[in-house]
Image 1 (cartoon, rainbow, N blue to C red):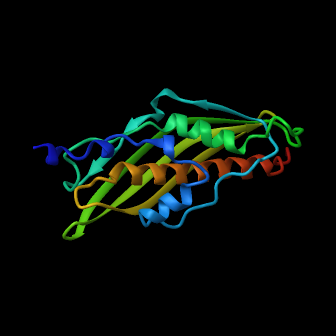
Image 2 (image 1 turned 30 degrees about the vertical axis):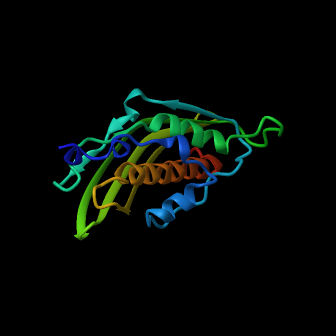
Length: 188
């Protein structure tokens, strides 16, 4: 019966081991591609606000690997990710501060057995929010979908969701920085 419930490490995404240094290797290990490079120092102070509902349960689509739920606590990962791109305290701010608000996040996953003990899970992660620079606001909405290789008993299901979630976070941050660096629209 415990086997039907799924392995314990597959029930909650653990972001404590996933960081800029090992992200590409972890993604390659689960055959998740493509991935974007981790954030670099943006030269900006970054203020972050994360809504309470960002930590959520992954919606499982289909029957395979659906015997247990997966929790995706993204808030702490997103805060750490945004901090990686913030101006380092030893440097002078070269650009105006950026405020990033994450208002919602959701993820779903569908797993299929492609052959005996070979399972692929397709995860889709959506992050919604807004950015603000010098009272200029802009919407942010990122959707990332990747498939990953998990073991025959769904043991790496949460790891796959975690990698796709960090990839979505990196793309969300990159979109915020691009929008922040764009010139303000002229007033008619």
